[in-house]
Length: 253
Image (cartoon, rainbow, N blue to C red; front, top):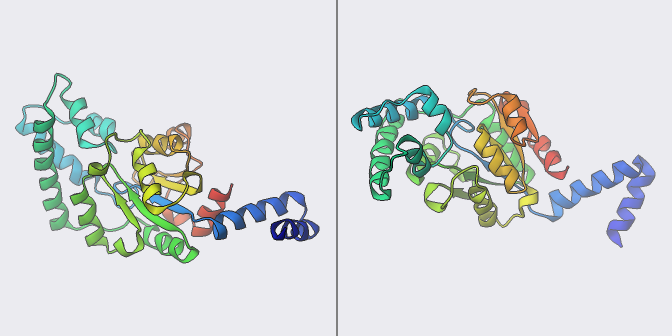
């Protein structure tokens, strides 16, 4: 009855469509928990060249070149899927895990040595989302050690309620598992979640999870057209172009 009276009151002031929109936003924002799930590499930070250098070094030791095309084809995917792509003739799961750890050790050493910064607009958006009451989590294909290092170096771990990485999933993006697990850990329904991503595979994963998404082209791994074709609700050039309120409105529909 209270919600019906609220709709009636707002209807009189704003019209039927505006009343329903406002009340739905009120329902999502204040009565139901809502969340933002962040990709890490390419969205929060740009560590692409550090990853590329580590893959080049590892593949050279294994007698295989690693090209920019290889990097584009595999960026945003978990190591098990990357090794399947790079060595289609076969590499055992145990060997892939061993080689993957060698690559990640090289990557983490270079990251700690060179440092890393949040991409433009990332910190202000995360802080604004927290002030608006959004829950936040990382949903990444990266190993947990990489995620923990980035959170340590950037100092944003206190804004997150969960962190889902490679070890927490059996299937990588574009499978929706990583985002569904993030939503589960936060206790938020997928329909009340939004994903921030820079990769086509990540946008496809968000779409498959039943979540809205915003594609970010700042690091230029994928075009606006390709992200929209994958199902992005909106595409921006930088996180500085959007606010926490924009995100809330997009979730509300």
